[in-house]
Length: 630
View: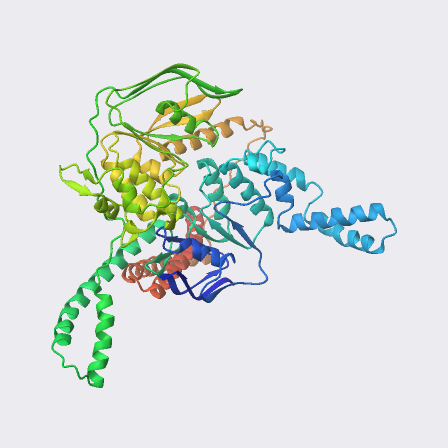
């Protein structure tokens, strides 16, 4: 069943073409992600699909008989109302029925003989029962509590970004939509909530289209990835890992096509130069073909394949020492008698739930906040580079290159050479005319990229990054990660991006709340695996031990042998298992050979899935018969 159909969609921003003649669809059960570089039109495309913007040409049509739920990157609420009030005033069927019942019930109490009110209340009662609305407020309160929203009297304007996102999630769950549109759903969510959202979206039958740069999120829940690249749309069946593999194959094939076109282009150029002014119809056709060939022969830009480096400030032996540091805000304890010594070249990740004090911890290190007690001692050679979660205020009236040149005209590279400000901008994917564009014209992600670049340019030897991955596209993340992997100084990262933490950090400081901070040696994935194992063992230990009544033992009858019919069935199953394994191998080979032929990719993927499902089914029966035979 088709839920969404995008037909010939085009959009311009002034003279700039964002995309042209895009076509794709979303079927029931599809779990699709839309990815693209910052500034390529991804957010605009999402807004058009959500009905918040209009295309220049084409249309995005959502099936009329389905309910659509939208989780915006920055959810909007009635700011002077509480979370509970906002949810009860939402668009969910439950909220709609409850509001109608409360209205007509009030009318009936005021006018007992009111015929319409009597009829409406009688009509709404079965719906109240079916939707279990008699305790709806209690149910909402339970969900909000699960999402760590406990102060139900707090107005929305007083909630943090993470709390607002969790309230929006609660509202979305109660709406029970058929099709879910999510714009950067993991922004402002801590890792625990991100993992909960993964599980909820992964449930069978859930249909969604999401925009995100969270690579583990993409890998764990998506069955299809659509990429908007240089005004074109490419579709890849599978998760993020398969997308990387297939995109690499497509780019290789495209590069070969470009090289072939370039050779033909040189020959055609020679022919064009030798032609007289008068053109025949035949030569006119060849000129038109030459224009097409010229476009094809332009080199393909390889995203995320740029080296970024700089010569950092000298780093001495003493880095940073924290001794018995404590910090409280009223009754809320952030740190209690915390001691830690940072070592040369240490790469540390900071994780924990929102509100546990991670940003306060960074401010203590930087001297922006004073500790209540204890000492913080910084080495004399330390040069901090701090990228805050809120980003850096950039001058709107300046051009991008002027912002960089105000810091330095030249940047010294590790090999002793110098790079200009423009070269550094190019390395950080400010391509084309972007370095000469005013800051006011940059997208949100491009602004954060520029702000991050200004931090790196100051040659720090101790980098402190607070949620650096928010709003950065995958290409920029790749460049940033390559730079940080080669960074020789100390690295301290607060992030909810599990992929980013796993790739760049070697140990963690885990903020558990109530002033408890636990050092952990290893990656975030190692930490979560051990915690899940501990939780599993804890639940197992908490199970009540049931004393079973003693039963007199009876002789165990021998296992029955296979009947003639079962013996023949076993032989047939063994043959079919071999056939399916062969067919699956052929389909997997077809998948690898499909290249950018997405019809073949879809067909091969469907076959692999079909063969695997049948294999799972008959293997289970084969094992049962084998066990019975022994």
